[in-house]
Amino acid sequence: MNGPLSNIRADGCASAAFHSWPDTLAWDAYSGDYGPNHSGLVLGTGTYLVWDEELGRLVAYGGLVTAADGDNGASAGGGGGGAVNHDGSDAVVTVHPRDVARRKVFVAPLELLVEIDAGVIEALTYSAANASLAVTLGQLATEGVPTAPSTVMWVTREDGADAGYTVTGTGLDITTTRLGWQIPLASGGAVAVVQVVPC
Image 1 (cartoon, helix red, strand yellow):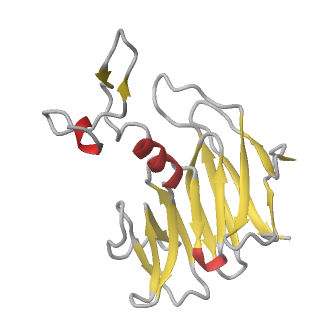
Image 2 (cartoon, rainbow, N blue to C red; image 1 turned 45 degrees about the vertical axis):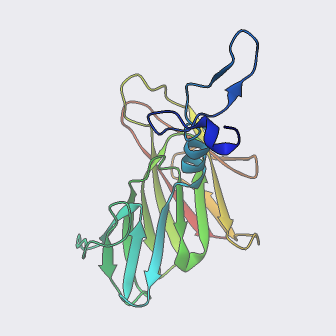
């Protein structure tokens, strides 16, 4: 038998490749899911805050939403999401990412994507009245995981146009680098809170 079905093992898993070296001549022990699917998960994971017309509320996919008054609304959305009732014009909601990486949050009402390259986004507070965000950054709190001295944050628009936002933080030495903002991160459970505000 040859072709794509010849790499399926007796346990039903597909092998990544056949090693044709004379001393090997065997299918790889890892399945084809190991590389491409893991990569797709890491590159595509994120938290998405969107306005749901049918529900009439902000809904988070991949995160938990709470309103300024502490109401977490009805459960909705994928990945343990939540929803909050608002008419949208004066919403102040906080999103706690619960996706695998916690490094990317898309805020649909502003058409903004907030991404970091190290650490985690602990929370993101969206204020509709002044179209701003407060982002709480921290280290991954897992024993044995190294900490990063800083992270780079990018704020981009979905359509590729200039986002028209800047990043500031009280008491933080924030510098521009790599088309984003470099933000120092503390260790030992401390967090850094930055403001993403219109220019």
